[in-house]
Amino acid sequence: SPTSLLAFSKFPEQDSQDISQAAERMEMSIQVLKQRVCQKYKRSLHPT
Image (cartoon, rainbow, N blue to C red; front, top):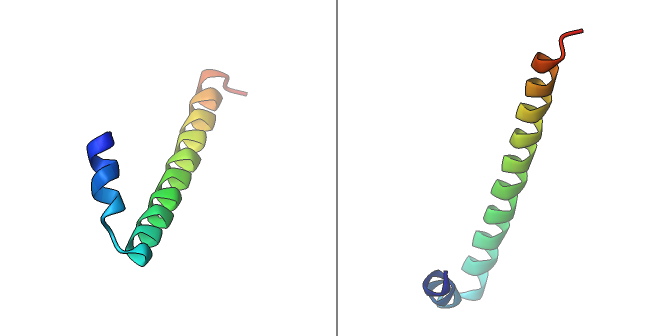
């Protein structure tokens, strides 16, 4: 949202870098978890 972007821009440079890196790591781990859940779900749909 525009409001959070404004608040974000008020952080000192280092803090905003740390925050964006943390957000990226969180996003990546969410993607990995989603992939694992999808794989498990697909396997349970098609038992071998």
